[in-house]
Image (cartoon, rainbow, N blue to C red; front, side, top):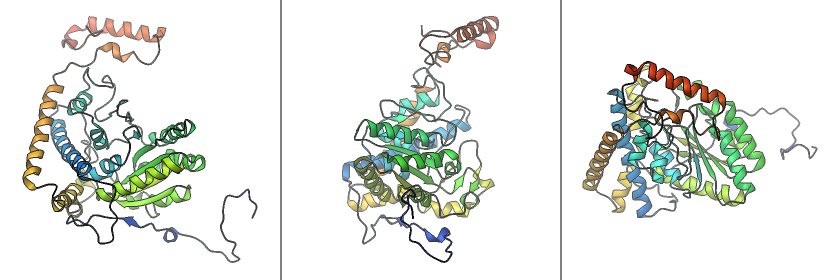
Length: 396
């Protein structure tokens, strides 16, 4: 075989066809559903402080999701997406990173942002698109972003963050920075062309990126069996030359362990990694979705037993680091914190209309100047439609 072909495959003299059974990856699981460890399990690097921070973030996200979904139903916000049932995936993996590693999220990773220190007020400012929103009210709810916390702003189009993650990781490598990128996406996004371009480029150029697939079984209403015929998403990583591992996405210790090892590979060896976390979305895809149309309660009940929050709580109690009284107290504290932040955030004025035109060009081109003048004239012509004091130009 010529050395121009990058393969060490043996030579055979009769046809052998590979199929999906040729590569079936195992699933890493450390924590049992009752809170005990598997006898031969290897723990991640975790102490009481880190464990309680992870669990605290779990409970905050549960409180945030519960209150915001109710607020959408009340008409107080326009849109929301919960991550109920998937908390171990993004929070557990983020806990394995350095604070200045870049996070590129899809749209269901508010837990990663909360773990990094995004405050309840900041969540509400973004969700209500008020003048304190870091994005200046230009994005729909849950499209968070924070330069300070190294969390790239969420983008609505599916899978665009994947090639961006490879490019960002290439820059880290070129600058010899000791950091990596983690890029979250669902198994549905793996059907987009961006997925294949991103993984292929990462594999070829050996960049420090961790692709983290949350395989929750559904691309909105389409079950996995109707999305692909292979053994999940993980074998695709092997095909593109990435180190690949599959984990129980509801086992926070398995997620933490896998990501800690993945970061070492990415940063120390410039070896890209694909992690496939097998999990389940207990809630709807979004506040616009009704999951009863494509799955049944019996299926959901099976996965409720596997709840990552309950599983971790049981482990914490067995460690002597937690108890039921503390649990209930913290739940109530987070609920009150979220409610207080929500009431505060919805009273803040929307951004000034100037912000519709700024931050694209150093100085406004003539066409945007004309559009801005036309908008000002429109508001002056129809003042009754714009009674709110928030409809104003400038930040006076």
